[in-house]
Structure formats: C-alpha cells, structure tokens
Amino acid sequence: MRCMVIVKANKDSEAGVLPSKEILTAMGKFNEELVKAGVMLAAEGLQASSKGVRVKFSGASRTVIDGPFTETKELIAGFWLWQVRSMAEAIEWLKRAPFDGGTEVEVRPVFEAEDFGAEFMPELRAQEERLRKQVEKQKAS
Image (cartoon, rainbow, N blue to C red; front, side):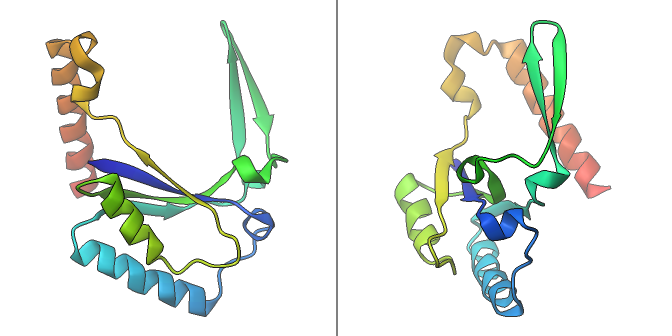
C-alpha cells in the first residue's frame, strides 16, 4: 500500500525558520534508511503559506486567495510518499523519525485503482496507466 505521511506546519515553519544542521543531518539519515528499505517513493518540504495561494471554486467562479493562512494546525510543512505493506508498518517507520517538540504527523492511505470499483471503467484505468507512464518517462528525461 502507498501512504502519504503529512508533516504539519508549526509557527517556525510558517515563519520561514529553516531546520538546523543537526535536524537536516538526522532527517537525511532517516531518509537514507527509508530509501534503502524501498519504502520512500517521494519526499518534499514545503515553503511557508505566505508564499502560496489557495484557489476557491464556486460554480464557474475561481477566486485566488493569497497566503499566509492563519490556521497553522491545518497547514502542511512537508510530506513523504511511502510504499509499505500496512498502516502498522508505516507507523513503525514513523516512530523512528527524528521529530520532537510536539511535531504532529498524519499518515493516510493513497487511493489505488481497485479502490474505485466499477465506477473506474477500463478506459479510465487505461488512461491513468498511460498518464503514470508518461510522468515516469518525463522524470527520467
């Protein structure tokens, strides 16, 4: 199963405070373990919401809202995409992450094609597979 591991923002990440050399080193070591184990598919940190926007959809209308956004507890500072056998395995990996100080991390399963049942018709499955291959090809270029 694939899961997204979502690292919640805090006042420091929203203020643009960058991690220390010690934190970066510890996270680098943890990420190496994830890669060696074949768990990590992707990982990225996100800049503060002050550098982002939200787009609100209402019928045909699109409204762009500039950051920063006030509800820090609802914001994301970074994420991993992991390939694991189960949620229990994801939790065991996450318990080893070099976080402290009240960091909150959320783990959520990623939908797979089979999760959509009959509504995900063969032509839609073929389209998704074609797009995935196209993205992989672009990443390799």
